[in-house]
Image (tube, rainbow, N blue to C red; front, side):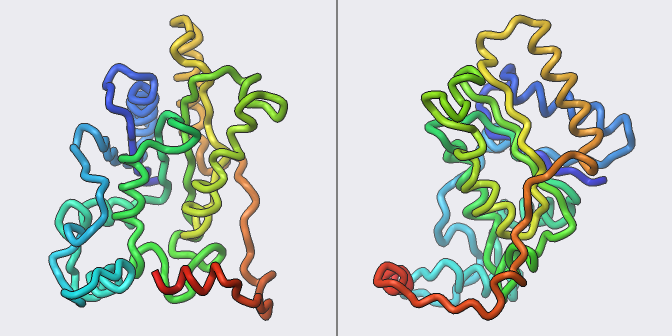
Length: 242
C-alpha cells in the first residue's frame, strides 16, 4: 500500500509527530511505501489565490474553480501545489494527522486542502461522493484533543469528536470519494505518563498496519439521490453569485 501522511503540528517533539514517525517506521518495515507532507517543516503556504497557478484563464476576476480546471488542463499548477497533488494521486491511502484546534483542523491543514483538492483534480464533472475521484482509496483522521474522553462524549461539554469531524469526514474526504476509516483519537496527551503515551503509539502502529481492514464510516451512495429535484432557496441563489 502507498500511504500519504499530512502532518499539521508545529512541534517535532509532539505526540502528533511521534505518531507519524511510529507509523512510518512500522509501515516501511512491512514494505509499504510512505510519503510525509510535514506542513510546518515545509513552511506550506495555506493561502489559496493566484499563487496556486502558473496559468491564467481570466486576468480580470479570480474564479477559483475555473482557474483550477484550466490549470488542470494546461498543467498550470505552481510547483509546490503540483508536488502535493502528485503525492495525493500516487497514494492508496491518506492520513491527516493534526491536533483539534477550536473544534476543527489547524488553518495550515485547511489551506492544504483548499489548494490541493482542486477542481478538475479531486472533483468536478459529477465526480463526487460514491462517484468520486478517490473511490476505492481510504482516508483517516488521526487527531489529538486537549480534553478528556468524558468531555468529548454525548453528555460532555464539547460533544462527540465525530460531530466535530463531520465536516472533514463528509464534506472533504467522503466528497472526493474516499472510504473514510474511523478516526484515531488520542485524548489529553499532555496529561499522559510515558507508558500511556507508548500505548497510544503501539495502538496507532497496529491501526496503520491494518488500515485496509479497519472499520469505516458509512458511505453516501449518490444513486439514492438520482432523480431527486430540490428547489433552490434564496441562499442557494446568492451562493451561486459569489
